[in-house]
Image (cartoon, rainbow, N blue to C red; front, side, top):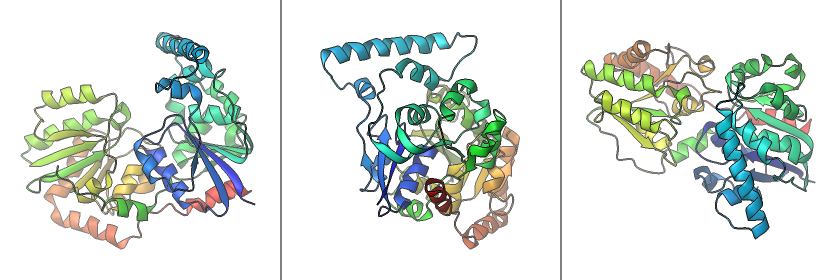
Amino acid sequence: MKKKLLFVIDSLSIGGAEKSLVSLLNLIEPSKYEIDLLLFKRGEDLERYLPKHINILPVPEYFRFLNNEKFAAAKNITYSYYKIKTSLNLRLNKYAKKTLHSEQVVYKNLTRIIYPIESMYDVAIAYSQGMPTYFVASKVKASKKLAWINTDYVNTLYDKELDYESYKNITKIIAVSQHTKESVMKIRTDYDDKIDIVFDIVNPDLINTMSEEVEINEFDKKVVNILTVGRLVSAKSYESAIGVARLLKDSGYRFKWFVIGEGPERKKLQELIVENDLLDSFFLLGKRLNPYPYMKNCDIYVQTSIKEGFGLTVCEAKILKRPIVCSNFHTAKEIINNNIDGLIVEHNKNSIFNGIRKYLDDSNFREEIVKQLNIEEPYNSINQLNKFYQLIEN
């Protein structure tokens, strides 16, 4: 008899956890598992890559209300009240002595009107911290519950004691890197017996296939094309990237730097681009359903992040054999062998600039890096699938 699994994640927008989940769902053996997927928002870009055997559950009612679905008058009034209440508390949270993570504020306000799932599961899996974990912990019946953490947890705004009330109901906490595990362990040493590491699932075959799907027109073959992929948020440190672009331009290099991703910092970053006279050199492309053709065809892939849960886009660029410059975030050395198959640099403008310049000025060095990337087995975390099977079977 097939085991019944439930996965819960906010949505399948383009992001590291979301891509990892889609890869995992494509690898799980459908003859052995019946799989349900719960999303709090439908219609995002990565849904098209889900295998056909995945059963997508209806979005919980309140979240459908937020997406303008109409219900009976009494429910509309109730949901409108909770929407206003939640919005007010989110604003008040900004001025509180102890600021909570926004997802904690939302869940505290909505828990009474987010209804449990009636089905019983063998294993329920929250594939990120926050709302998916709170939902699995308190609204799902399952013999075993797993919760993924894919961020530098100790440095987040989550109230850790408040979260503990949910994690008490979780069988196993899954960290996506050694650093992520250590970050969680700084909060509670009693998590030690319930935390495991499973790296983000990366499927090289899927990435290589997707990299051939479309042609791109933005790159200019007459100059060096630099690429960065990631949400426009402070953790990605795009201010540093813009500063490096200014140094490159002042040094006479001919290049175009493209950023794929969207986020709350777009306006600020666009203003910085203008201030640095980089309108002809630094481009915010916004979201792209498939970033891999851009990765495959760029001359240099650069990641300027201050922190990463794991560094999935760097892994993907490595699979596509691109010369990489990445800042020394905590998990960088788990992905890149410095000066062998890529460059790890310190997180400051001059170090990043010098890393890029090393590729541009020394063609022999660049060729050696690419040669090594082609010799190596493609970066592949499919072996993490066996860890996943052990977690749900044991």
